[in-house]
Length: 160
Length: 160
DNA sequence: GGCCTGTTACTCGGATATAAGCTGTCCGAGTGTAGAGGG
DNA sequence: CCCTCTACACTCGGACAGCTTATATCCGAGTAACAGGCC
Image (cartoon, rainbow over all chains, first blue to last red; front, side, top):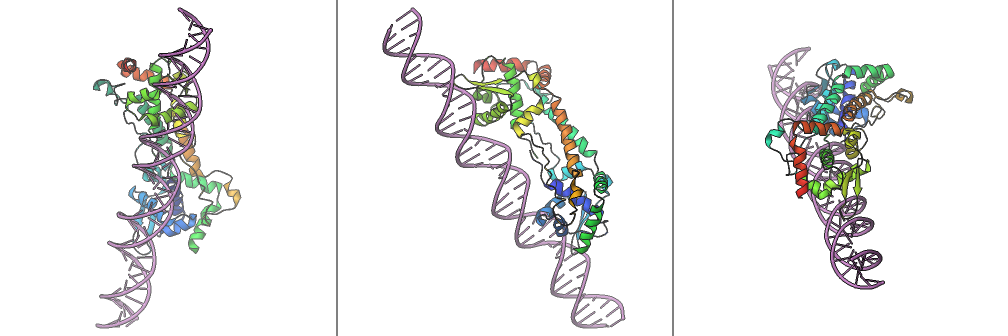
């Protein structure tokens, strides 16, 4: 159960897009160069963010990606859901109904499997914690711990 | 990010082993037949539970698996960690340090990446919720909602 | 009849194929731009 | 000098391989039970 690296890439790219002001679209190649990531694959992740409504894409020459809304309105949960998909990590296959060993009349399966319920409860806590952190908070934390990062990033994009 | 099916199998098998009393070892083939699961693969998951100290294995003829301790002392977190491994789902690769775009002096990387911190916090909540549910509670819940399940299981194993 | 021993059948344990999903890459559709030509 | 048309270069978007991980399987090591032979 390992999360895709794309989540980390996507979150960092959103912060960079915010630092750049959002006046002009930023192409995938420049974002990828900033972090030394494979550009085509990063493009795939950014497309997922567009489908989720987190970014907007501008096609054509001088096109690229923009934040679709301020970072205050995007949570870490939104980014994870955009990349990983909305489905739960634990998928109950109802093995209690399979096999004669524990087969019971259908009335016994009105209530959900206890294991499945506990798993969903735990994942709900995880989602709640992720939804409580907006990207704006992450940006502010970063600026507090590394005040020079934003300026350094802006300078690099001005040169490239 | 999908969790292995083995987790569901392992949890159900622990409940069955508890219902059977633990006087005699139960072979993999019988457990697999109970749920119509592929026996050799289930064996692999049970071995993981043995390594984690949740089950004990008895080799030789009339061998099989037994609970190593009462269900009160095993949490759902223990089962997940035994099957999935102890490492976190989110692995921070520190892309903020890669690439000239956001490269800063090493002093800026004393504190952990904010994204990584938020992810770890969320996973901690997930783990906390899983560790709060013992298998004994799951067994009791199941018996409350489906009182006949335990007897039916015992009867099936008596015939097979 | 009781005990010992060799055989046998059975089960765990790890090493081995197969399939699926993530990672990484490429090329085509679409669009804004720039330049050249004409009015 | 300004407008328009055309060709171009650039970027997104989806379709295409490579590789790691999860799934499923098989065979050998080890052990308890059983049957046969011996005392």
